[in-house]
Length: 255
Image 1 (cartoon, one colour):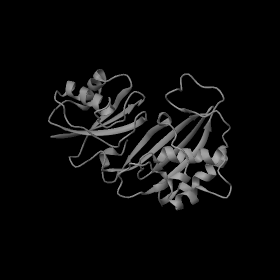
Image 2: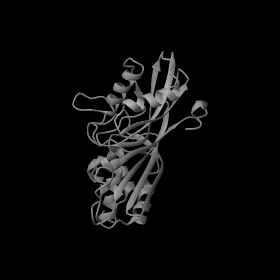
Image 3: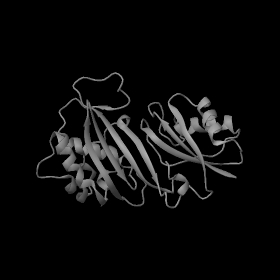
Image 4: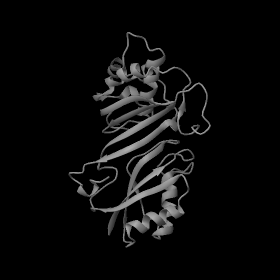
């Protein structure tokens, strides 16, 4: 039995997220359809994370146990033949039997893309959030520093989340302008349901008029969802990088 780890990238526009669902097409579904064509059986696949409807991934991993002897290079080529244009397999490698794409993940980085120009961009419609108003990037960057560290982030979690704990550690955050885009990057050991989108909405709240007497730190301490910003649209969000412990899994050192 081999344990194969696949790195993929996808545009989430037409998918109801990653995880298989009854009410619409998902990334996992089209992956398993392709797997069934190549291996040729519907091998179970295990993804590194759940992404919501409309969310994209620059980097995503899934693992699969198989008896097939197909070389990794051939598996990449063959799967891409059967996948739609908005999902791509980037690489495949054999990893130890004990490796688990989800449970061995030690951190993730998300980015949120904002198209910050007064006019809309026809080629950014499903790939970034159009925000036509002035953005005070330095002010947002300063406010964002309050997210760093280990906190109870229940104020930044949508209703319906099933997390046992709302404590998470944010290891990095930045707000940068790149031409007409403003890019917000957030990395941490894990994220709650809609957490990044609410964090971005809160930074926009800082930008356009949160009272000077209040801060992001105050909102975190309050634990009240109503004090944080709105949940920005999914189509600006990207799972950008996935981190594994390369000391434990030396096979992944080059990822």
